[in-house]
Image (cartoon, rainbow, N blue to C red; front, side, top):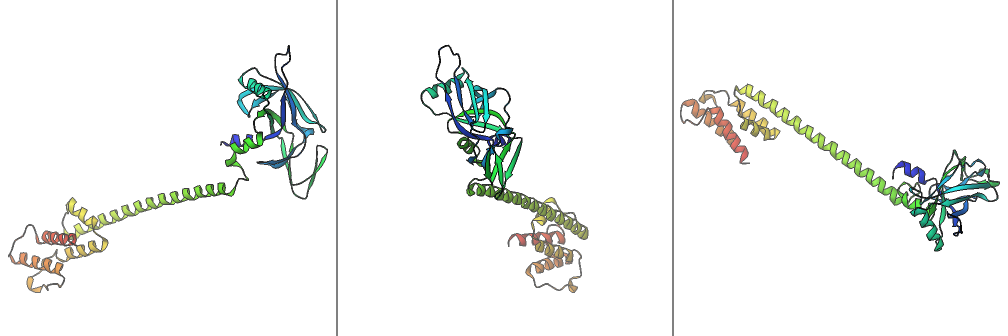
Length: 312
């Protein structure tokens, strides 16, 4: 519910019953009357708990709309006159419109439906009287905790089926500051879920950044290796290099660098590692002008190493 509706509903109060007068001959409009506010303490309101309106500072200006269920789209009539006293409180009289809403109020009343009166009041100031303190309002000495509306302006009255307290509680339950704990838990759960989603998004962003950093680092290593070997690798070779774990790439780069320089066969000592032994023998054969493979000894060494890594 929008904040505006929440604010309006917290100022709605069920305050009594309205009686619709019977049809009178020669009278064009149906009339109604009732005690809009008795001047007593209103208890168990969904928002204010205990509240009282200061009759001495209450404001009513001109004709006041009479609505159906506090809806400005359901105009049922108007308050034509009112009276305020400590003995009677706020009493009002008014007329019903001849439209569908005014007719609905009149017809239902004729059938015995007990319309209840609800008022929307906007106070000029609000006094919160704490427990242990007292206040004098409407000729009564009251003990806190209690809320006092001063300078309250009646903006409209409404015909309500259940009374404003029940209606407002049903409409604005999600904004009720004294709502059951489970509603608060739902809010906390939603907040926790939102936080988890936020963290997951940040984690995904960090993973993407880490992958990009690793790719950039490997590309730089490949460029350095090309310079060391004085060789330009193909796109496919670079792709294979990029897929290697760091330890495998370091081993491969070291082996390629080791065999990139041809040495006399008699000075070479065969390595014990099978993969290195193959690279050594292959380089030695080409150095002696023996068997000829495809490409240089360096190319063949790399091809053999890649094949050995894929077979793991």
